[in-house]
Image 1: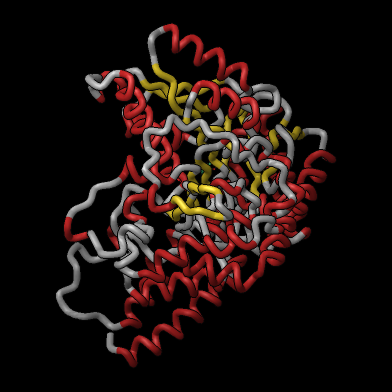
Image 2: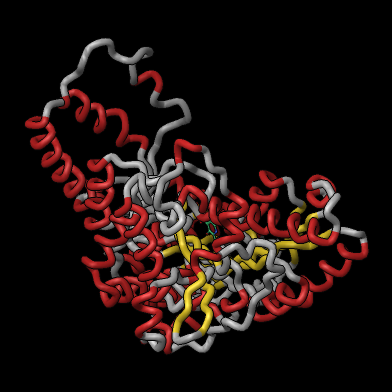
Length: 523
Ligand code: PLP
């Protein structure tokens, strides 16, 4: 493909995407294909000779589209939303076009610097505690009372559950108004929430091993590793369990209370039992907005324990985090000031395309110490002054993800993004009211954001049959979850353009299928 053809095909592709998104409701939500459907449709071997673009695009319609689940469809209510917006798509396009790899500041300074600034913007939009935000001499020196954070009362800069083994922040030590200021917070974009949780666990692991070595210099890593224990709730995303598998860490999945929330007492008791066994508690992953039912762990109770016991406290807000750009939802993150790290996915609920996971840490040096290797070919002369994101995660090579954040935030403005989030929350309430009006259904948990969990009153089998029937119809798509032995159907408001009418249409489909399933069950 030469440049002239690229200009032409690029414009055609924009039209193709715009048409697809505009007419998406005419398609089935889910595909009707069976596993292995694609292989017989494609040649066994890669083509030897160049093929025409028209032929390639024809095959997109023939072979690919029949196997697509349409996540942007107005009747797609599964999982959580998959962020998508035109500015974000254009950001992705420019990132691909620039074709850069931003592993260090020197590898592409704008890539690193825009990322730092975007994490700062987002952190301030969500009113995260200031300890997480990257240091900015101009901002922090001049406007110490900046308005974004002034409406929060959860600044807790005096909370520092730091056992000080990673405190090598000499280059960030600045004298401001005669006061020593050692700022250690910062944020980075990673590929997924799972990666954020894994990285947090790896940092906590490295930090605990190093702190043990302070009191026992001859202790082997393996001796500490075999005793480390992490904690999370039974409703935490499975990525916490997976992080434990990868990091070779025992993970305790603790019981939640009647509000599906992990409470301090349960954690405290589990820690006590483990310590009696000679084990070493070191990490807790709390959740704001669980995948199962969008419940919230009690960060204050957990945070106080983590502080006392010197455990790393990670908070996973993969979905719910985006809601904190709206002041009225910030009560849900009460206790966030205790967190050592926090993640959220703008690619779920802030109109960014996948992938775009934000990860903030209170102490970036704990992160850098756990993740740094430094071969000669990656070093550069500004390394002492600049951020090198290759030390902030697992991957070396990194995409220019910050462009889509920049494009999307500027295009919508914070006001536009808040409106979008609020609209989803309002529509979830509309759907909740419809469900509550039909006394064959019950709502499970509180509807706080854009997720409604419901079930048919009766056996789990009944709701299971209902969901199977709904998903088989191709008219709507939802996924189940299990909370406290109850099989529930999760209805997430996902479409960017969702309306009141969409809620009614969805409810009508659900009601019709419920009629059939109940009838069949009685027969
Ligand atoms: N944490 C929570 C609360 C989630 O809801 C999800 C996914 O839905 C994840 C983690 C995993 O996200 P990712 O696919 O970005 O790894």
